[in-house]
Every structure is written in structure tokens, then in C-alpha cells.
Amino acid sequence: MLPRGLAKSQRAKRDALALQVTRIALPSESVRYYALSFDATTKEERMNQERAVTGRLPIPPLTQLSEEEELFRQSVRQFAEERVRPLVKTMDEEGKFDPGLLQEFFKLGLMGINIPEEYGGAGSNFFMAVLAVEELSRVDASAGVVVDVQNTLVNNALTRWGSPELKAKYLPRLATDTVGAYALSEAGAGSDAFALQCRAIERGDHYVLTGRKLWTTNALEAGLFIVFATVNPDLGYRGITAFLVERDFPGFAVGKKEEKLGIRASSTCELILDEVRVPKENVLGEVGKGYKVAIETLNEGRIGIGAQMIGLAQGALQCGIQYAKERKQFGRPIAEFQAIQFLIAELATELEAARLLVYNAARLKDAGLPFVKEAAMAKYYASVVAEKVTSNVVEIYGGYGFTKDYPAEKYFRDSKIGKIYEGTSNMQLQTIAKILLGGR
Image 1 (tube, rainbow, N blue to C red):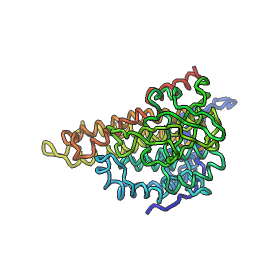
Image 2 (cartoon, rainbow, N blue to C red):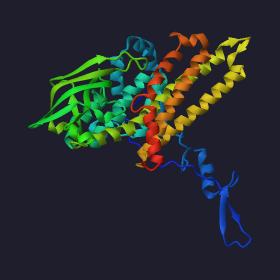
Image 3 (cartoon, rainbow, N blue to C red):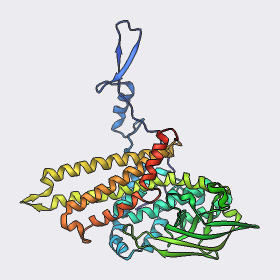
Image 4 (tube, rainbow, N blue to C red):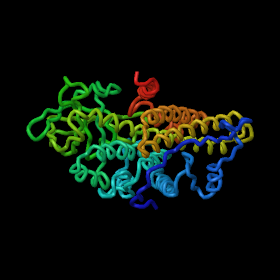
């Protein structure tokens, strides 16, 4: 049974690859050179070998989890199998997330993983949220994104940018019973996010917000929204400001719910703001600095989407492997045919590479090190791999993979969104290239 709270984790150690080196001595012994070797044994390596059996490596591999992390992952996995999986088909068909399941997320602490303990959260780190999203998405990507948006976008933004008063007011609610949503996109502001038209006009002790938002995840269930609006269109991105808007503020309404290809149980809705009065104290961060809140929060959120993608890809691959062992053609399981064996090996290899990218970006974020490039790489590649894995798993199933009686087609449908939301694949490539080319 998953515990209600999560113990506070130590900050993740910086992960690095240790190069094995050997000393090459010149005859004069006056100069020492070091070269790569596969058989050299340094003092550090001997320590690593001695400690490997106990799992206490000084510089652990990226995929080696601490005892606390492994216990947490196993707990979420068990919960996903026992409580989420039985509801997946119904939620997908009805296009609605089970409200009882959502309440269980709160009771188990999954909606406040990185909220400080003083506000009722688990006080854990970013990597724990990544593990939760991955494990939930292995069973249902919709469940994964509900937890992802809550933790990596809403909770993160409020914890980092909120005033002490805002934290005290909203973080306890987000940890216990209130779903959060993140409203940036508009009809004319997708990849060009700062072309938004939603206006915020200052009037005394409050702002009046007017406009429409699109593609807002969790909107149907949310009680609190981070809404981005401009206080002055003439200032361009420097006029953008983030506001905390409660669902019951007069003039605020959740509009049309989109009927989507995938992650159907996750609500995606239009927001309508008709002269919504928002107190000045509900400004998140500084006036005119909303662009900074948006950019830096999305940089972190992309790691969460990467986790969602590797999770659903893992779930699909496991189904494909099991089916290949059971399905017989020409008198033997198709898993015995080299074509299927090589395909599974290739997919597993690319999935592991994607997982390393996601874990590395999350570890870097927790260590307080630069991670923007790594986050973009993680989201980009994990989305590519998820689409490839799920598509090939449909083919492993053959005709059955094209029907709704088997899970392959849902994993395939769910994977497509990875290349689109929280920054399209092209935007990730642009970010990566800009950093590699020195900002040009």
C-alpha cells in the first residue's frame, strides 16, 4: 500500500560517467599520460566494485534507484496495476477521468509530491514526480498526465514563484483536494506562445481578465488555474503576467471539452474569461515577468512529458513481448522468429536510451545544474521513441492490434500527443540547436 506521504529525499548527486584510465609511463618517467582502457582498475573503480553489491555506488548509474526511490516506484506500480488498470478501458471510451480515482491520487500523496511538508505535501524532489508519471503512464497515459501537470507545472510554479501568502493559501489545497491547471495557449498562440491576446487591465486593487484559452489540460477537474495574460500588448512578451484564478471567480467558465485522438480520459478544454476580477495579490511572480514563469516552468514540465512517453512506451513494449510469446504461427510462437526478436531488441534499446535522457534531465534539475538542453532532448527523443515503439507493437499484434479489444491501439493513440504539447518537437530541436550554436 502506498504511504500517504513521501519521506524527504536527499538532493540527487550529480551523475557522471567515470572514464577508466591507465597510466602510460614514458622511459624518462618525467611525464605521465592517461589513456582510455577497458582493463585498468583505479582506486575509485575498486571502491565501486566493492560497493556494487550493496547498491551504494559513489557515482551510481542513472537507472540505479536509491532504496527510497525503488520503494516508491514499486508502490506506484502496484497501485497503477490494481486500481488504475481496471478503469482504463472505460475511462478511454467515455472520455472522462474517474473522480474516485482522482481522490485516491490525493489520498496517496501523488498530487503533492514536491510540495513542501509544511504545506501538507510530501516534500520530495522532482525525480520522484518523474517516477510517478512514468509508472502511471505505463498503465494509462491519461493518469500520468493528470499527476504530471499537477506536480511539474502547477505545484512547481507556485512553489518557486508564489509569495508566502499565495503558498500558504493554495499549496495545502493542491496537496489535498484541488486539481490545478496551466493555461497558456490560445487560438493564435501555440508554438508562438507569447502572441497571446488575453488581456489583464489594472483597476484599483485588482485586475480584470478577458479572453479565451485553449488546450488546457485538467480543466474539467481543476479548481485553480495559472492563467497567462498581457497587461500591455505594446510591451510584447514583457507585458505577460501570470495570475492565479479560482474556478468560482465571477466571469470565469470552462468551455468546450475537446474530443481527442488519445489521452481521452484527460480533460482538455477551452477557458472563457469574461471580465474576471483577480486580486492583485494573486499575481504569480512579478507583473510583466509572466514570460519567465512560463518558460522556466515549461522547461521542467518537458521532463515530465518525457517520463509519460517512456512510461507508455514501456507498457506497450511489455504487451508486445507477451503477445509475441503467446501468438503462434507456422507451428511456433512468433517470438522465436528472428525478425520479431530483432525488432523487440531494437525497440528496447531505443527505449532505454530515452529513459536515460529523461532520468539525466531530472537528476540535473534536482542537482541545481543547467538542464534546459537536456530537458528538450529528453522530451524530443522520448516522443519519437514512444511513437515508434507503439506503432511497431500494433504490427506485432497484426490485425488484432488494429482493434480495441487489445491494448496496442490505445498506446499508439496516446503516444502522438508527445510530439505536440508542452512544446512541439520542432520547438525542442530549435531549443537544442540554439544552445549548441551559442545562442545564435
